[in-house]
Length: 343
Image (cartoon, rainbow, N blue to C red; front, side, top):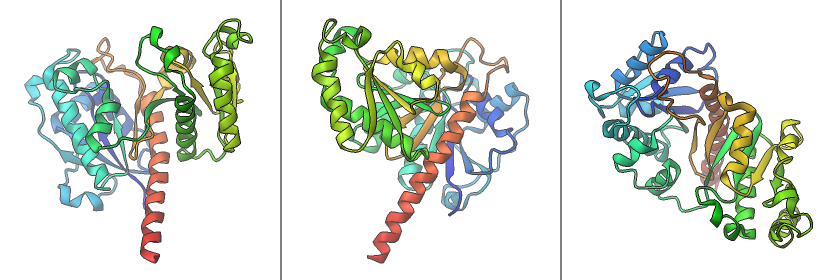
């Protein structure tokens, strides 16, 4: 089987995205396991190379030639004038080029011309000003490709994944949104993502909602009435799931390598822990989507944009994980096509 083809887009050009992608290209083994298709305005990529103080040779190709593309190639876009790029500044133009490049990458993925998408950090304020009209880029992506299945961002640190039952809602609304159905969805999403990344027997820990896992109902009954029954249902479906573990100790198990994923009940329950464990290596993937999509978990870092000091570690981790996911997706697609042909 040929290597997967990964589309890479620069994110917001006002941030560190173009710089960290330029640094990624200078990793000596970056093309060993994947072909890369850069999407974006050439002056943005050149800007990133200049800031990173590295050289970059853009071999531009036409859309008709993408399926024969190998190595590192560039699909030219004209989404923003060079004089509209303002470093470390939220701009409508920055949001517009982010959305346009994302749309192009999604179109190519839906046409099976690329096998995965890596995007450098977006700026949500810029994208919103440019017409994002969604809670975040994940909701935008699902709407754009017409996907109505369960999906959620999954955060990854090295070999550990985390996802959550509730996400971008207020703390006062968390408890009433904890249901068995949502727990089942979150755990199965983590299990699926781990398997796509190459883990054949994922071990998943579920965090409790209340202090001390409710202390037998003293601090709340969610663990007794909702979380434990959901875990029992998952075990009956042959998933390797344990819990509910107190949220202040479950990540100690993860840190020791005793589990492969932690499913938390709300956003900061997992985000604080995983960012303290390795902020500079964190990755976010679009869990549940039919397209393999990944990005470094940090933001556009306007405070250091243009200074040439951005760390490429998270971007490299995102790329390597994405390659594994895209390879699995490509193999699954080829198997389906072969089965259809044989039948």
